[in-house]
Image 1 (cartoon, rainbow, N blue to C red):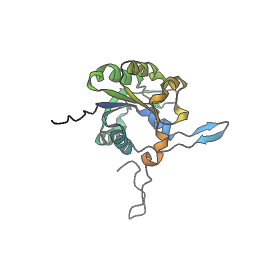
Image 2: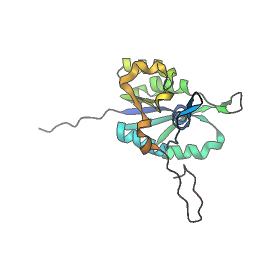
Image 3: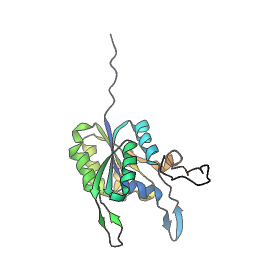
Image 4: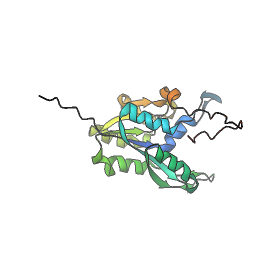
Length: 192
């Protein structure tokens, strides 16, 4: 009699790109002392990490659309991300802002909901509290990946068993500095 192979669950990741990027790269200060030194995430390594560690089949990266970033978007797609764009607006300081929270919730709870068995939410943002509750209730939440403890909302305390902090994987996921080429110049960091 043949043994049946256990089918792996279909796992999708839903990534808040801004929370992930700022949560890893931003220095954090307390009483004018730096208590956390930011680092640059290598998105190619992160996509591989999601595949290797969690068997993520699809990784949806929610990102504000800025026309000048088209080469970056192409690169991210080549790494295996499925990009979901949000139109951007300028904030009071003239910086582009593209709040993707509603899109991420819509994709995870409706558009892609029937296509996966388990979900990973990549964000430390408390705005996703209702999504986490919904996924737990329906036995579909696998993990909440948070950049670091300082970028975690206190609303996420309820979900301790699902949390994964990628700061612990910093050495594996950090973008390496470009090595000098023959002319002595350093290449662009993210162009590999």
